[in-house]
Length: 308
Length: 308
Image (cartoon, rainbow over all chains, first blue to last red; front, side, top):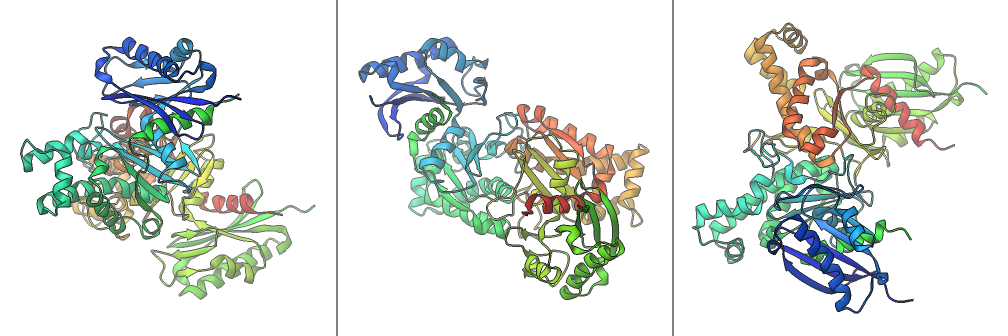
């Protein structure tokens, strides 16, 4: 029997990544396109379709070699019905039956889910959360996303919207958030917000990479800055820890690259803020799968939902 | 075959309730003792043992009529190992193997769990949360406790400590809580704290019952007071709603008796603060089983864990 593959797509506000993975979730071929290159919904859907047929052609495979196509998408998704509710950072998407559209055009089984959820799935099956029973995964980027593993399965909630750790309020009178709420974690530690704050203290030339570098060089002001980010993040993580009593919290995404300074502070804060039993149980871990986590998770989504 | 019963005990800081329930969880006989009457751990354990043998005698039953004994207890419990970690409001209990001690003295199967957890179980099986798939139960009393139903089962977390909604922080720089954290919900809406605040505005003669009555009579100051309590409660409930995407939130305990004014405000706040998909899904409900919820839940605990 010929080897089987899964096509995985990780759509972000910046990049559209497409990869072929084998059934052990090893990335065998990968391409990265620029999301901004596609104007409008139809053009992006065609790009997805073409990228799948293109990557098959390049690898001299035909559709029968594919188990299916999995997509991790940057917004709230009804994974069961295969509907994109909307994308906060890509205009033109509202209540799109993407699964049905792609299945019709690709003539392959398609599975779609939120990007933070598939990353959580990947970290749980093959990454930092492997072996845990209950886990919380957080992705720190422009948005702050999350996924919850309960008793060994991705927990989706009653309308497939669970895991929104970025929208746990950390101050009752905090600033208004894009989601409509007040004082949400994301409005304090989302990429853009951190950068804005950094510019106030470090000037307009600062980047988060520079700030991490300076903190590693033991610059006191930079260390204080990351300690403040960690503190705010830890308020929501403490709430989730006391509520869910997980084995681990896995933190990934761009901001997690701040590294040791961020993680040391988050660990310290949770140890001092969370309830003793919960604090003793929970490990704070860096995501393991890096930039491929979304692709791996999208492939896992296919394998776990595919029925022959 | 003779009818079978379960003995259930609901231990609180104030009362020790003991009841006989049938296997349909109807309370057939109930007694209430004063917890403060028992000085020290040994005396309380003896009171529990005597109350079980006493209630059997009064009902002309012997031990073979009992499926087992269930206890809802006011503190963190390892229900699997049957250990009381401690009771925040009853001194002298630390790491007590209560299940083993009672089983030895009663020669009956004994099951113990946290009081908010067993109340949650009761509201899920027979009360306001019946028919839900995912639910959050909150008990508002001296402490603020909680329980989570996930996919139809009580979710316990990795060290049986999940559900502590009272210790979700609602302000990063809030007051120090008994648990060691900062800005926990309980430190804003626990019974004692609400009463303290009420005394500042309404004088030392005020009680929470009077305040509810005044709010029902449309006293503006009293209405504002409850709106404030509801707002703080709703910050934590919004966090839990966005994270867990439940079908319902069931609120019980003494403070819930404030009634419509509290529930109307909580519903309004969650509708405006939580994410749209989650807010549309979640119903905010008053607990149905009232003062017997703890006893019913303790009996359910026995039936669900008993193996013939």
